[in-house]
Amino acid sequence: MTALDARPVGVPAPAPVVPDVAAVRRARRGPRRRHALVVAGTGAATLTALVVNLLLGDYTFTFPDAARIIAGVGIDRPTAEFLMMEQKLPRALAALCVGLCFGAGGAVFQTVLRNPLASPDIVGISTGASAAAVFALLALGLRGDVVALAAAVGAVLTALVVRWVAGGIGSYRLVLVGVGLSAALLSVVHYLFTRAAVWDAQLALRWLTGSVAGSGWPEVRVLAIVLVVLLPVLWWSARSLRITELGTDAATGLGVTSRRAELLMLVAVLLVAAGVAGAGPVSFLAFLSGPIARGLNAGRTSIVGAALVGATLLLAADFTGQYLIGTVNVPAGVLTGAVGAPFLLWLMARGASGRSPR
Image 1 (cartoon, rainbow, N blue to C red):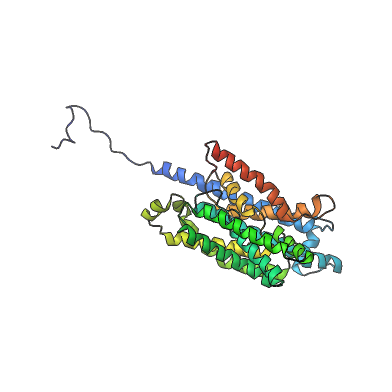
Image 2: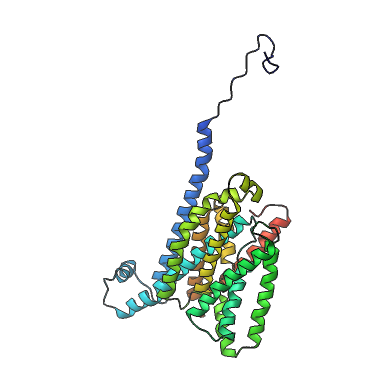
């Protein structure tokens, strides 16, 4: 008899601990049900915003008429067909795709870096894209799709520089390096503006504001291809996001290597680069989507929810800027910036008060 078996005579042995499998299943079923409800709710909100953008405005459509025009049946109204197929539909689809890109990319940034402030706006990715696009516009005199390509290349190069200077994506210095590089790139943008003609400066400023106005089918096709290629990779890699949130050491101990985190960040950078190329650096869109989705999902990361929130926000901002603010057209980036700046201050105030912003 060992010391562990020694016990007073007549005292029964303790009952073996049997795990309550049903309780474990219920505990796991709750978060899954909540996530499904969040995805369904944000998906319904995105679909509603898309339908509102298509049907309402200065020229309104009924749902049957819009459906017939989109299906190609036609209603023998050339003006209505032109407005729907060449203006409303491509603009709404561009806002949808850009919102998905920014929302998903921003959520990955904040989750992998474990910092709610680590959005592409804050760490310099959007500023790098803006600096490259402005340089192409004002210094090289380029126009059209070449500017969008320059913006995408600028976003990727900025991400690589930030990672190299910070010493890796797991470094606490990454956000600080991003903020510093963003300030440097912004000074480059300002210098280019001082050397540009008035008309060229106005063109660059309109692009910097962030808007889907003027988006056509070529932009929609490119964005759709990017989403079709990158979202499956993101879905496959995002299965390790909950483990990645525990930190680099814990994630490595659980079998999630740093290469998986780097792949996630690469996909996020490419998504944000595509979004910037399609609509310009829409202020705070990537920053807002992740925290809103986490709040709806009881503090848990939801990449799908964040993507849908981003799409809903951009569709709503674009419609509001077109039709609901007097007689002027306000770019969507102005409205998202007006909402995002107070939200940033609120997050920082929550952190300063000792409560986790997540």
